[in-house]
Image (cartoon, rainbow, N blue to C red; front, side, top):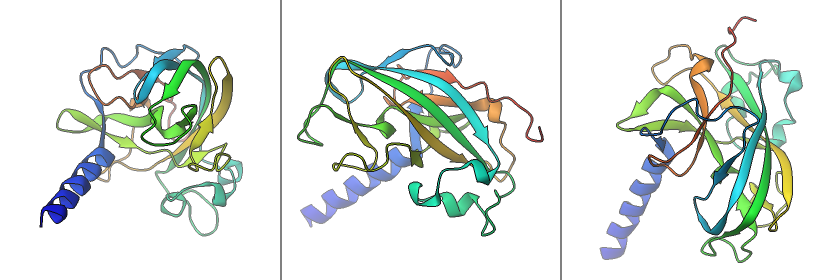
Amino acid sequence: MKNKLLTLLLLSAFSLSFLTGCGAGAKNTSDIQPGEPFEETSGLAEGALQVTVKSAERITDVSELPPQELFFENYDHHVLSDGTMKEGSSFILLKLEVKSIDAAAELDRYNDPYVFRADDLLTLIDLTEKQGKNYYYIPVDYFSLYGQESEHSLAFRLSPGETVEFEVGYFVGKKRDGSERDLSQLRACTTSGNANSDFVDLKLGEDRDD
């Protein structure tokens, strides 16, 4: 009974962490602009990862998407069988540059302290969608270095002082209430999940029909 209760508690905690992400108490949603580096220290034993969003692109033409086998799970939710994007869906592609400032990961996940996860760096949030004090987040669904590290499909290795560039992508559909999403309200958010979370304004305010 004790083990069953512990399992239920762990599952509940996991479900909540999947639904909610960045803390709503962040300083300012436009603090960081594309091209401006910031430091991510969440989940690190020491040092920091310096992250820069080099570019943010909204893709609505499926012919521009990577091959379907490189996506994790949400492709069929946003792309029709004929290869066209479903109404109200977009794919947001971020090009990231990550530099290790003597960063070492905590060893409770992998045995190599220089293996990190792309989905530990940034998620997407919509400033108009929250649960309590936290924003719902949109998970990473594409990683350009997919499967290059055996520890996890979203893992990458970065030794102190090294720099790597890669792309991460997110499928974005309609809001949970079924209404159209205003892309200008999307922000990339560090995953520390507290009041010190940083937001990156992705400049995705274009009209849906352009």
